[in-house]
Image 1: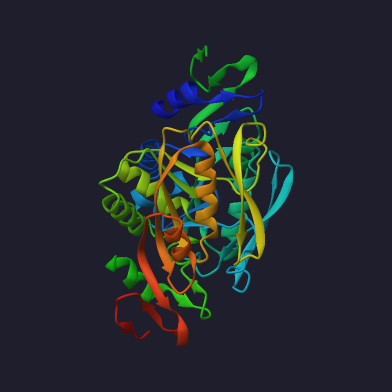
Image 2: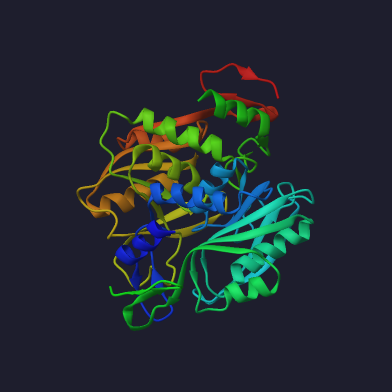
Length: 197
Length: 197
């Protein structure tokens, strides 16, 4: 998605060979017009499949996932990172997700009321790195008997193992920007020329 | 906002005299069309004021706030509930917010990069009860020198003290649904007839 790549080149900041900071338009400050285009793009990429629900993980996934749900005309569900008071008394499925960024394990949960065996679920997340969050969301869905249609990622760090893990497990992954490398303070996209920053 | 009230009556669940659960369309599963209408309604209610940023608090505020930002054509910022690895090394303003629901105090933070003294900020949140979250967001904004234009609330529990605290402090509050009482398993709106569930 060309506009997203340009935004990453213009506003993203390379903090290290592994860390790209996009808090000016995606995960702290959010560009609502870009999110709208991202939602339309995901809907387009999965247009030939039946999708009944969009699932993401709070918090940074919510904005792109909401716009995807709007474009597809289906509800969004955001998995909660720990049992809040209003979730803990109901019937939930849970999974453990390790965050390499924060070096902590979170329990994520979805109420069984909102995902059932008839659902066909598209997972949307802001980043794909090691695949832990996406795999956690997949484990949630599969406990309900619902089908995972695919995984839509805004920014994929293709030099990490997440896509390979998801594809090896048989899941369809669509990433709107695929980053090959962050070495030498350069953002290099997969199949794209290296663009000097 | 009539459609929101109908949704609350149809899908909300009264768990106690203080707790209304709306996790089927607002804070776990999210209805994207309703969020779009909510965003348009907030933009309409504040249409005579200059607004440069929308601010909310992760996670449940993000969906209505994103749609408000889209309708207003300005960026959304969501305050983070604790310092993540990617926030902690930058210049942030912070405030303490006590959650009565969860019985815990969270530090919330916004990067100074994204709110400055020239900004005119509209706060959006899903619920107004005791006003702690809104007042925390106001304290964040005012530390940056920016101006608080007003506070837009999806569901106000008018029998709690939040609105009074905000208005006494001089802030303009617009709530799309104002709940007078949850007694006897009935949802009663302010200025509306009591509707038997």
